Image 1 (cartoon, rainbow over the protein chains, first blue to last red):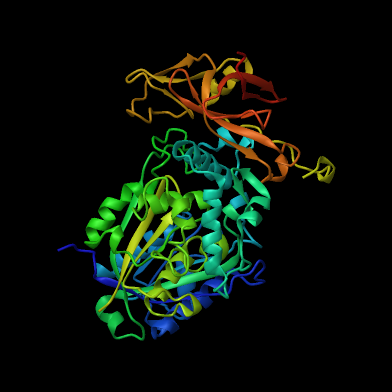
Image 2 (tube, rainbow over the protein chains, first blue to last red):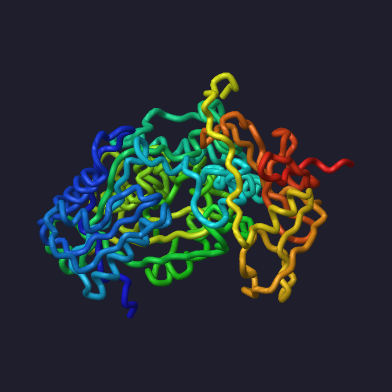
Length: 385
Length: 141
C-alpha cells in the first residue's frame, strides 16, 4: 500500500479579498486567510501544530510568525520554501507528509503577498546564476522567459496567438462568475487581439494579474477531517518534477523539449500513485501564470493531446458547461496571482460544494498543478465517500 | 512607451556581474570573439558558463572559439519594459540561437521584424562603455 496516497485530506480553505493595494501587512493577510480556512473546517486555530509557506524575493512572512498570530503557540512542523509557482501543490504535499508521518496533526499551508503594491514578482530581475547572461540584454523578467517558450510552442505545433487567446477567453468566462476575481469583464477574440503586446507573442491577457492577497488550506488526516465541518478533499497523490535545470529557473537554453514541461515529467508517478488517470478527472485547476504555461500543463498532465490546448479551450471543453471545467475561479490570469495557492483553494471549494455560481456539476476527482516550465508539482484530490 | 515619456533619471543599463566561470566569455566578447566552454570529456559546448559540464559533470574544459553562425530557435519581441533601465530600449527582439557547434545562446536583434524560425544569423558585437554585448544579425545571403 502506498504510504502517502489517501491518508490525508484538505479539511478547509480560506482566502482574503484580492486587491491592487491592500493597505495591510502581509502577516495580516496571512492571518485572515488562515483563520478563514480553520473556520471553514470548524477547527480551533489553537489546534494547529504545523505551518508551511512559500515565498519569492522574501515577499512573505515566516511560517512561525503566522503561528504566533493565530494562537498556535507550539508547532511541531514548519517549512519556509523559497520558490515560486512551483510550490503550492508541493507545500500541500509537504503538509500531508508531515501529517501522514505523525510529525503534526493539523498543518496550515499559506501564501500571502502584497504582490501588486509590494514586491512585484513579474518585474523583478530573476535571481540565480544565469542572470548575468540575461539581465544586461534586457532579458529580465519571467514573462519574457515564458514568451520565449510560447513562441517555440507555436513553431513546433502550428498553434497561433489565437490559441493562447482562446485560453484567456475561456477562463474569463469563469471569472465573470467569481466575485473575488479582479478581471470580470468578458474577453472576446477582438478584444484579445486589440490588447497591448507585452512580450510577443504575449499580450496583456496572456499574463497573470498581480494582486495583494492571501490563500490558505488546512491539511489533516482523513480520519480527523471526517470529524470536521466539511467534506474532506482527500489527497490521493502528489508529485514533483525538475527537468533540464542548470543555473536558475529562467535559464532554459539547454531544455530538450519545449513541448514537455515539468508536468509531462511528473504525470506518470502522479497518476500511478493516485490509481487514476487524466480520463477520471472531473475538473482541473491548473497553473496558469501565462496562457502558454497553461497549455503545456494541460498537455503534460494528459488532459488534452499535445499541441491542442488552444483548440480544446476554443471548443468550450474547459468553460462553464464543458466536459472538463478548468480554472473555475478564472485562474491566475483573471482571478489574480496568489502564486497558485488560490488554485488549490478553488479546487477544495469545488470539492466541498462551495463553488457558488461557478460550482461544477461533478466534483469527485480534481487535479491541481503548480509551476510552469523547469520544475513544478501537482496533487490529485478525491472527494471522501 | 514613447521616448519622451522616459524620465531623465532612468537608471543606467546593467553591467554583467561576471564571475570566475564567466570571465573568459566576457573577455572574449570584448575582443569581438565568441568563446564558450567545451567539455574535455564529452566535447559538448555549453552556455551559460559554469564550473562543471551540465551534460556529464566533468570539470575539465577548454575555451573554444566559435563561428558565431547559427539559426533562430525561438524569439520574442519585448514591447513593455519590465524594468525602468530598459524603458528607452523597447521595442527590441531577443532571439535564442542554435549555433553551428551545437549550443544554444541568447542575444538581441536590432530589427524587431526580422526574427523568424530557422533564420540564419551571425554574431555581432556591440561595445558598451564597460562590456561588450553579443548581438545577432541576419546573415547576408
